[in-house]
Image (cartoon, rainbow, N blue to C red):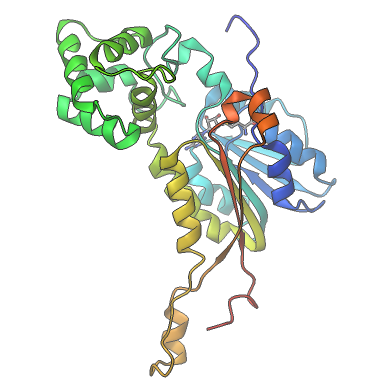
Length: 319
Ligand SMILES: C[S@@+](CC[C@H](N)C(=O)[O-])C[C@H]1O[C@@H](n2cnc3c(N)ncnc32)[C@H](O)[C@@H]1O
């Protein structure tokens, strides 16, 4: 890295407000990044509060390890392992708030050596944890045209997915694509209709990144685990950056806010009622960034913050 990379935390004020932080509460930052949200939470916590953090990126983790604060602990892990972390720390059912600020951080996007950028040249990697899994270059080289087209369509909603996949495989047969700008130029040439407001490689890069890092699977597993980790009244606040992420978050909150409906007069025993799915969450809010924030930090443009709260026993006793 030849210059200082900076990540401006998205909707920081809103995240802090959403958590209703208690001085002695227990919180989890599932996406530490450069620690913007973590530092803001630590400021609000008293001396008996606790903040646990996770990031799969080794650079983000090493930044977290530099925080000298006995109230803070971080691990270098996928957030799909949140439940194991909470078990290990004996905080199951005790956590007051969990945050997710999904996607990539500026240290990943702006560092051309990480291979996330379609505008800057670098090795075609795209792994948030470069020590695990397969790089984008290796995946493109070893996959069929159909597999690539499927990923571009599913995770990038790219309407020219087939044309792009054919072009990628055509060039791969001549020479393995190893650099971001090589890939970006191949995509640019393959797309017949250009949108002057959006870079032609944006959707494909997003799709390959999501696939390589198994991002959507990770989110589903992690969100499910929060139901066990949160205590009644505890909150979950999630910032997403594109419709595929937001759809999962929204569906998770809706599915867990709905209780099973039992038609009046239905012959059903108390034991059977206990087995029915009880709604565990209540939806609190959905917030978009202010115009001022978008002007100051254009990366916030597409973000959506959704907030939900785990119900207490009393709120669940309506069955
Ligand atoms: C948008 S950044 C978070 C920025 C952070 N809130 C801040 O204020 O600096 C997202 C971070 O989440 C991490 N991340 C994304 N998916 C992850 C996963 N499945 N498991 C663990 N960390 C993940 C990325 O490595 C990245 O550092």
